[in-house]
Length: 312
Ligand SMILES: NC(=O)c1ccc[n+]([C@@H]2O[C@H](COP(=O)([O-])OP(=O)(O)OC[C@H]3O[C@@H](n4cnc5c(N)ncnc54)[C@H](O)[C@@H]3O)[C@@H](O)[C@H]2O)c1
View 1: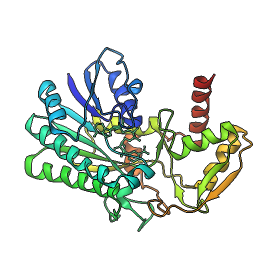
View 2: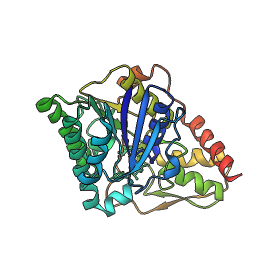
View 3: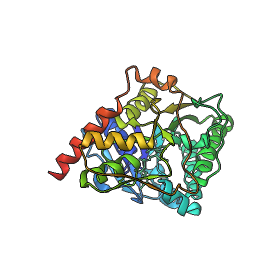
């Protein structure tokens, strides 16, 4: 039996991960989350009654240590973090406090016999792009903002705990991921909502900054392949799509798919944190996944359907 801790499991990505983990009877999953941005109802029931939720702050040693002592995990997925471009820019100290959470998770993992820690890093560690596509090994990291620095420090801690204590790790560098449970302030959810209501779709600056968008199932399935097949051990993998598109193209696509009457309007550019380009070399991820990524149009249609189910 695998005893697995999933931190941040009331949030978007980790709740989907916990749900798929729960399909396997051999997994016992404990989800911890302080509900800062996550929702209690996102936590799956567990197909085999094998998911347990504990409201808990991973940045507090007192809170998280008792969970580790009670359950003796084999594997940890550490996905809890303060997220969101605007939230992380507005609350830099809160973001930096997440370093405490990373240290708590690693100290407790090394001291209680955890076999491997999986960490959700971010494409933000690459910062303003020095080369495209961004490769795990050859592209230099260029982290400047607190959120990106925390992810970079997290990666350094994982490597160091492996080097000094033999605690195994896997780093997932997530690029933009989207799906039905994503918070409404993320670009695709925001544009979809505006399009559905016929409101203006607002784009920062000229909207020529590019992003790639990865459907949630592709993210989770690649990460689970790494887990079940013992791949990417003590290593890093980019998790994202390599189909680059400008934000203005994304807005146009959403208007087209939803048949909306919304206008696309421009706001002044963000002062910081809006990288000009981002695009992974995702060849390692594609090997893990063993199938094509879901095209963005199909993913957006799935979201529209899911939302009409909720609204209708
Ligand atoms: N969504 C993306 O496109 C993306 C891209 C790059 C990296 N990531 C990373 O993936 C992970 C999951 O992000 P998400 O998009 O699902 O965001 P999310 O906000 O939906 O999930 C984060 C979860 O962590 C919880 N949390 C925050 N601080 C906590 C703490 N101190 N203790 C316990 N729980 C805490 C929140 O309540 C939330 O449920 C994060 O580490 C994020 O940095 C996401």
